[in-house]
Image 1 (cartoon, rainbow, N blue to C red):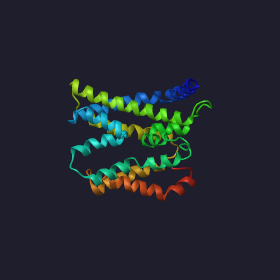
Image 2: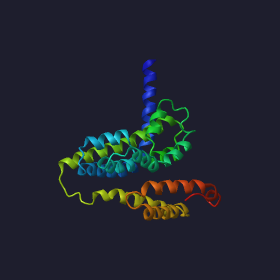
Image 3: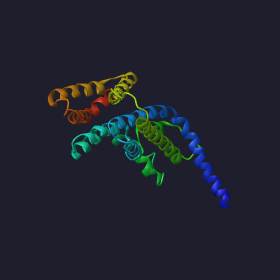
Image 4: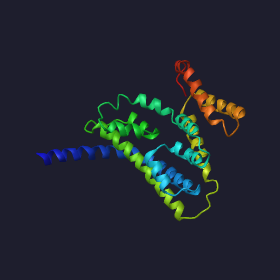
Length: 242
């Protein structure tokens, strides 16, 4: 009896993993490339591979981890670091609200699902059609776990390769800028309306002019979040925030 129950449990986990894995294959390619780049960037900045390994395991927020490199190299400003991290990942507040119903009944897995939620995991878990014979909680768990592992392994290997293989890393720090440019362009192409993007660009340029290159990020993010919050209802009536 116990053997049969154990077999059913193992089958449930395996079925959920098999259903989740194909959805994460495209994420694997992107996360490994960015993870390797992040690990090499950390090494080029003077950190051993332990730093990207532990940060990718415990933080698991790609953009925030790239930003953290400069925060670790600069003067100690905990309030600024907290504010910048919250602004960078403010979108996760809306992700969390959207996933309230989907996370119901997942038990202890809910804690890891909340911790491991990233753009890609949210997108898959929110939109994927889970097969009827697959446990929804375990499906979302394995999607999150696989994406986490991709990023963790890429960042760790990047840190190791960066310390073993010597090559010119000049310009590697531009990867963060390039990543955000690509994300912005993909969003611009996908969306029909560009009100949000234009507001973001305009407010960023305004804050850059007012505060300078070293201090404009937090004011710009605060302004963007505030303006989009105030204009959310009118923009939704006009066809959605894009």
